[in-house]
Structures are given as structure tokens and as C-alpha cells.
Length: 101
Image 1 (cartoon, rainbow, N blue to C red):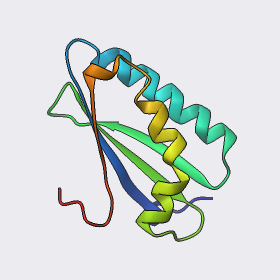
Image 2 (cartoon, helix red, strand yellow; image 1 turned 30 degrees about the vertical axis):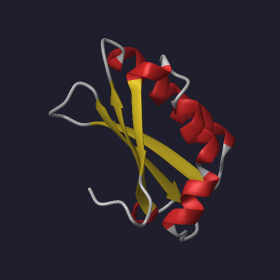
Image 3 (tube, helix red, strand yellow; image 1 turned 180 degrees about the vertical axis):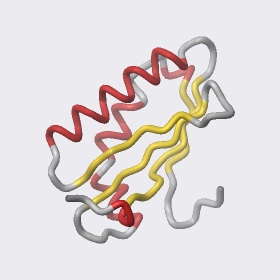
Image 4 (cartoon, rainbow, N blue to C red; image 1 turned 120 degrees about the vertical axis):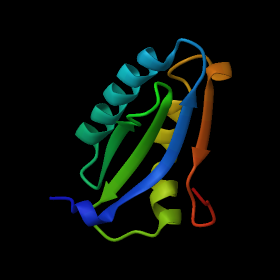
């Protein structure tokens, strides 16, 4: 079982226009698809409660990984997030070791 302590924020996504509901459903489906394929990393999508268009993406790994390694392993997942709605509606901030929130 993957430990909650290995859960790390990997991206914050802002969706513009009226695409947030569509993105939310598709992002959740995408996370489930990746979770079914992978036994090493589990992805979680969280919609911020005080915003209709901000989402946080977390990844949890079985083994302790650095943020850099986790991001590298998650690159395909993050790239697919950008294809869920028209690109002009998506702003993604990938969270690395130098990111300040």
C-alpha cells in the first residue's frame, strides 16, 4: 500500500472560461486510468474548495522519491493534463523543489 506520507504536490492547474467542470471530470478519469496502470505511483486530483477553477494534483509513491524523480515519473501524466481542454484555457504550474506556494 502506498503511504500517505509520500504524497507530494506535483502541479497546480488553473482553468479559464467555462471549461472547469469538463476539466475536473476528465482529470479525475485520467488519474483513475493512471492509477489502474501503475503500481508505483498513485495520482490524486483535488479541487480547491474556495475556487471553481483551481485544482491541485498530488502523486504518492511506494518508495520515497525526491520531488525531481516524482516529477520525471509523472511527466506523461502532466503532459496529458494539458490535452483535456483547449490549451488556451489551461495554465499549469509544475511544483519542483524551487517552487514557492
